[in-house]
Image 1 (cartoon, rainbow, N blue to C red):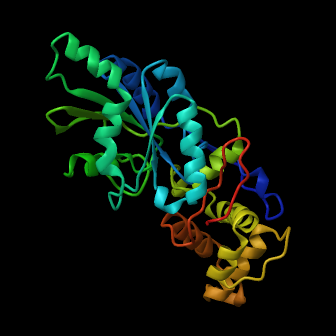
Image 2 (cartoon, rainbow, N blue to C red):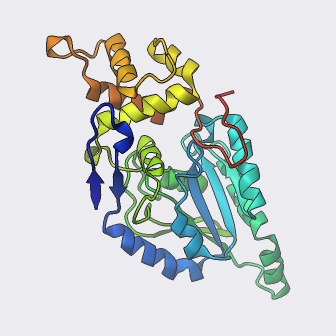
Image 3 (spheres, rainbow, N blue to C red):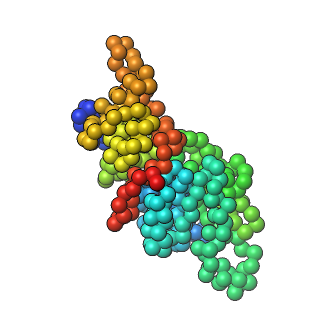
Length: 304
């Protein structure tokens, strides 16, 4: 299911994003049924949007089962806010691990962190003589958060199907990491309705929602506005822009496109092309280390 209300250039906040393909209902039921098979749930989230990339339905499904939050793509997020979010999640009783699944940074700590989160449970197993019992971990996350690539790095092999687009992982897959750790990979899952459209936009920025069903130009305009507000210096340097407070996103997008030479007939700027470049460079970390969300009570900060 997908609904897009295409806004005019002056009405970009009206961009309405909803995407919940039918297979995600099946995935939800599968996760619910398989929870009894695992000891720990590891939720992979995007460190650039830690709040928006957390599926609220996961909390309901998992209940009191031990949790591990994997702050993936931490290398593309603001270091100070990585630490702030880590502190926030630990305060909620979750184990936390910062990773960059593409390079593998931090991934080698996953086994130790997972076992640490189950320290008391493992001790009880030993008391019962269950010394060789493997730790079983379900890995969940929204689409395109780097979940399958993360699992492949943990297992040091190409087990899960991974591509840089949402909706690639097909069905559940058990992956044996070593004699004492098994991972259950699951397809990426969203939730039926984004009550807060800011969440939908930020998921779209990172690629969790397919571009081919998006108004990419409008999305690029809203991303321009958000980056201009939060990281003006980095944005100005990357696209050689002169920024003034309150400048509409489409004006910034047009200026950046003109600087890049993205012109079409009549000398107009190809805004769609510039929007795709902006999104690609944001997703690839080429603009800098940006975090778009801070924990409650923490001021947003730049990419220091």
